[in-house]
Amino acid sequence: MEFLKNSLLDLITETSTNLPPDVRAAMAAAGPVETPGTQAAQAFAIIASNVDMAASGEDPICQDTGMPTFFIRTPVGTSQIEIRTAVCEAIAEATRRGKLRPNSVDSLTGRNSGDNLGEGTPVFHFEQWERPDIEVRLILKGGGCENKNIQYSLPCPLEGLGRADRDLEGVRKCILHAVWQAQGQGCSPGALGVCIGSDRAYGYALAKEQLLRTLDDVNPNPVLAELEARIMGEANRIGVGPMGFGGAVSLIGCKIAAANRLPASFFVSVAYECWAFRRLGVRLDAASGAITEWLYRDPARPVERLAKAEGLPLSGREIHLEAPLTEEQVRALKVGDVVLIDGDMYTGRDAVHAYLMKNAPPVDLRGAVLYHCGPVMLKQGDGWVTKAAGPTTSIREEPYQGEVIRRYGVRAVVGKGGMGAQTLAAMKECGAVYLHAIGGAAQVYARAVERVAGVHLLEFGIPEAMWHLKVRGFLAIVTMDAHGHSLHAEMEKTTGAALAALRDR
Ligand code: SF4
Image 1 (tube, rainbow, N blue to C red):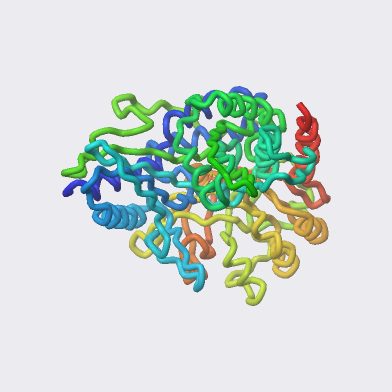
Image 2: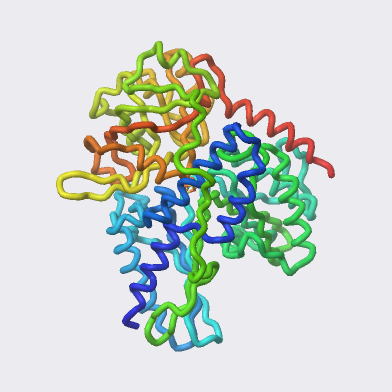
């Protein structure tokens, strides 16, 4: 199959860089629902620009290019071993070209393999079918939304919703709870794949498989179709909104399957997918490996722009900050302010935060802006080029962040999804803020990086290293300030009340 590797490389590249039409359509319909001038509307506008930038530059939509998960159907007699080898070669090549971030980490040593290959990576689901051609479908689902997957074992109590029993009403409560518990941490608005029943492991697999359905299809099972429609209406009344900023659109899709279960078990498994819903597929000629058909899209139809206007949606009221920052600058900020940052930023996520608990930082962090980000970087000559650089989910650093602020004098933490009470207390005590960037907007933020000034701790791998970035016009919203206010704590309360109102309907 002489064309197989190149066909797979095309599939991987297109999946990472070009949002499928059904997701574009859902996002295009959702944006205008938000009130103009709100942070929710601003988030949609930035996301739309990001999607266009990624497609036109053939760059990753989001810096977290996820766990490559392949669903492959082959005719009888086709070598699955040959396909598996070609997929691995294509994955390694796509990583070299910066279309995928090196995302495969040895769970025992912490070492990043650097090419997205390793034990259990990528993920394969093979099936035989009776057609003469090969079908390959790919989902790239990132860690932020993967961490918001959730499984319920009924009957169970649910915060705000009371008891979920072993019936469709109990299932409804679980799905609504899944939307609420994700808040903005999975880069809402999200789409859900749900499985009612099965066992713990296969239930999750079937839930993820639902993400292969297009957002606009209708479930052939009328009971499930009705439940899906009902969830779409009710979930969007909870008010989480894009990025958890509050708003009318929390969900762009809900796809539910039901599978038989053991008499003793009743699981509801939920796969939470972010707005950067990267899923595509191809049909291949089984003799040559050449692409005969694209799934989910019509290549003859040009990609339509998502953004209504050029550039970032600015109001003129943005506050310009030059980093490093002073305590006075930071204490003047309050929740809701929109800032544009120029100057120095340092990335730091899980490995860096753990390192800082035992070691001094490799740079002076006094007044620093610390960016929760695992970028896609490509080496060019002696330097590095930023290919994608959006925020990662901040809550993972909650056990460390307060201590990092106190010890090293960090003045601003940039990330997405917000942080908790310990970080908020440290911010109040020391004078620091949390700045919310738009999750998944990796191209918008890559273009705010003027240059990469250096890199430290590269032994942690590209996503986990501490990158020194020189930025200009980096847009973020203050969602936790030095006066003890947190939009995230506030949103959890108000959306919790809205969730409780859906308890018995
Ligand atoms: S959009 Fe958000 S949740 Fe999705 S892959 Fe990117 S960072 Fe992760």
